Image (cartoon, rainbow, N blue to C red; front, side):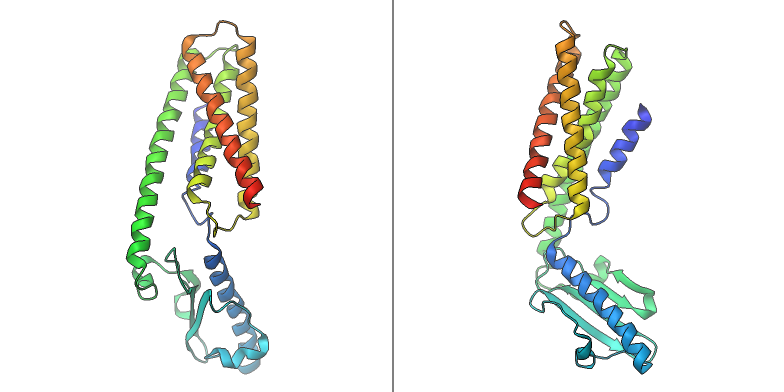
Length: 253
């Protein structure tokens, strides 16, 4: 049971790790750079050097929206080149680069980003700090709820109470994903197939927790008072989480 809690929260913390929720402009900027990298490889095979500007690669029909994406070949030579790509009006301060001297494609760290994202960088960082603080608060609350679940498991573990405890366990990952969706999904965020699949799984867990909790309450006429409180919370959390995820699926997918 302890391992299950650990694995559940490991999965929940993944919503804060990596770039699961990406805005459309960032996705387009990264794709534009990947396309340029492929074209540079073709150009090198034909000319034994890399292209120094967009004019040299016109025949390869590199397509990207220049009003959304800023793409530049900063330097190029016989055996190496450097190119950068970022949204023309960045709201996330993400900059992508290809540099032969640095091992190829990479996403710039904050110290290098400041050279490319000007003006709005301070505002972007302030907004990111607020968002990170809100997420940290949420994870602290989630940790407290997990601890509460472990205490209930230790005190009330029995064959007749296991269903109620399992319902509570299942509602926690569902709630975590619902909170992540509320905090990150906006009009310009790409609702990818991975996000949609995770949302379907989360909604299934929420509905399963709702079904288990409801069936346990109907079967147990006089359950312990602490478990009644736990199950009421479980049902509310499951219902709200399923509602949030259902709304996201119908609105953005």
